[in-house]
Amino acid sequence: MTRYFTEDHEWIEVDGDSATVGITDYAQSQLGDIVFAEVPATGATLKKGGDAAVVESVKAASDVYAPVSGTVIEGNAALEGDPALVNNDPEGEGWFFKITLSDTSELDSLMDAAAYKAFVDGL
Amino acid sequence: MRQPASVAATLERTDMSEEDEFELEPIEILELPLDAWHRGKGARMVEFAGYHMPIQYEGIMAEHIWTRENAGLFDVSHMGQLMLTGDGAAEALEAMVPGDISALKEGKMRYSLLLDEDGGVLDDMMITAVPMGLYVVVNGAVKWDDMGYLREHLPDEITINHMDDRALLALQGPKAVDALKRVVPGVDALYFMEAGSFFWGPKTDPEPLWISRSGYTGEDGFEISVPAAHAKALADQICAQPEVKPIGLGARDSLRLEAGLPLYGHDMNPEFDPVEASAAFAVSKRRRAEGGFFGSDRILNALANGPARKLVGISVDGKMPVREGAPVFAGDTQVGVITSGGFAPSVGAPIAMGYIDAGHNAVGSMLEAEVRGKRVSVTVKSLPFVPHHYHRKGAHT
Image (cartoon, rainbow over all chains, first blue to last red; front, top):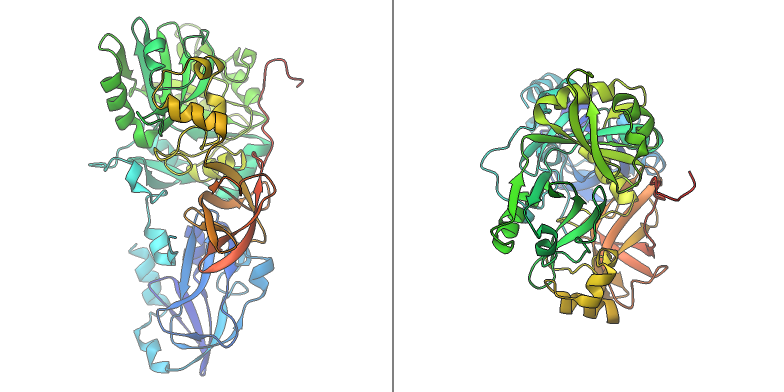
């Protein structure tokens, strides 16, 4: 399994042709207390860079984009009752959705963990 | 309505309001006297009203709850502290504000509104009668506009002194009085909306502070005007009290929203008159009888016949926040717009305020707001969402 990152602070963990997507620990720490998350419906078709989910802190609403194109297998239903999971375990239990990738070559443009760390350090 | 931005764009956004139209374009972002103090306390700084301001320290939710249960220290030095002096200052100011300012006794303060010539609200402000004249605190984002407007409309013999050599601190919460009376003896004698001068510091070289029992959270508390040179020492001493933590602008916004207090530039602007803004209480009895202030025809008509639309509280079904800019519908007809909204930590649910048309704005009216193309059920609610806990004279405590 390989984990990639976007400049929009999403992470995607790829396992074969399916993947799990969430927002990074850096993103949650900067957004602050998460009070609401809206995840995509099973079967929804996502386009790389398109709107996929919404995360809301006390202050503001933010879009979560699809790091790659694909079809949604599952949204994380636990976030509805406990949006703070995104704060408490952003890169684990606080995942947003799982997708089937339609074009694995789209992963080539994403950052690995070291590159993302360097990107965040430069912000 | 405004669409959400990407997570990255949200993180890059440094202006917490996004609504620039009511703010002067700052040439440079200025530093307030406590800038380094905030950074030393771990604050995350944002640009607000042309200044670097702390939006949060440990987190908005925790800071909000701490203030409701203990005491929070807010730096509101971006606000404009003005001193109006000269014979007849109160009477002259009454041309532009609907309150009975000339009847204000020394040491008493009143919430009022600065009106444009059509009765639209240019700003909301606190006016205190002091021995020198009138001490007026206005919003930071519009203070330069206010000063220009006051200068234009006040007679030349009235002097406007912008006291930009002073910081303004607010200590808010049920334990604010316990903490502050240890630092500044005697402040507990003040009641809500009273103010006075109090000595602070060593007996050999005490510093006079101007302190009022007022605030913007719905809780008991104080606002303290202090010379900028002494602000850090005072903030340190107040924060050393066990009841007190520093609180950022983020919690200030959620606290005031729960308290049903409008935020200028969002819940109030020149489009709306005081009656529409649900601030009819700021139109004093004598002024209603006499009129003679900017927009008095429009305002007195709205008082007599009811406003065409009104700022109201709005509760939201479910957990999804309904934010500023969301349209509000009765069936297919748009009947209003949200002007402030977010998650309310002490309520545990989203809440909002907005302007709703007559016929749909009675308490209990069931409406729908639109968020990202989806409808969410909302209900018109009486304000405040969280009861006020002011230390009023004559009230049982």
